[in-house]
Image (tube, rainbow, N blue to C red; front, side, top):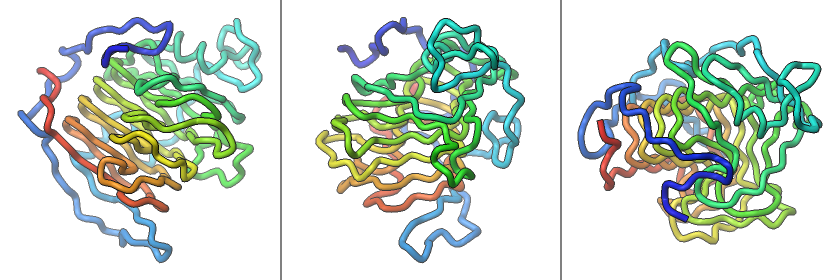
Length: 289
């Protein structure tokens, strides 16, 4: 499988080079906003309140934004063939294939089992949103503020290897409030560059208000396995998430790994139970302008 090959059933599309101009050359432009709320917790966890780019309130996925009214619905028990209405909901896979710019897809509470195959996310949208109309995949109840796991929208790997959910070559996508995890009782194994949330070759993607639980899974791959991996992206937003139980033992097994990604904001995330929190690297060529 080539490095740009997508999941089965999805046709790769070239990155929209005209979506937004990239700034800077070489390694990613990094700016840091000092923490203001005490980053170290009493239990050894950390809360990230820094940013590697401007927190632009016009961006999809700004902090403290309220959930949006849904236009379509996904339910864990949907049998397939629905129209996305609340009475005849889509499966998660159908929503990812069908959603277009401006759609807000509510992902109902329940368990969505995924069998990943490689470094590119098994669950990823087939279309891009737009600057004024991103595509939003929004949990019925945001995981970060829902103590009852049964009320969350849980994307779980019980078998397979590689990445569960994310984006490749699509722009203006928001994942809001999902619980993404490994089932420690399953047969899933890690692989190089196969993080639970995987974002490649895209612009204006947000992952927000979620929980990512790595289940203390032993890391069998030698390189780049984390809770969230980003490579060759721009205008990435990762905020208000809880990352837990990551068993990495080296810098490129960090919880959040950011390679060749420009104009990125990572803020107000809680990271606990890990060896390395955030890893930035820019040795490859950045996305072309």
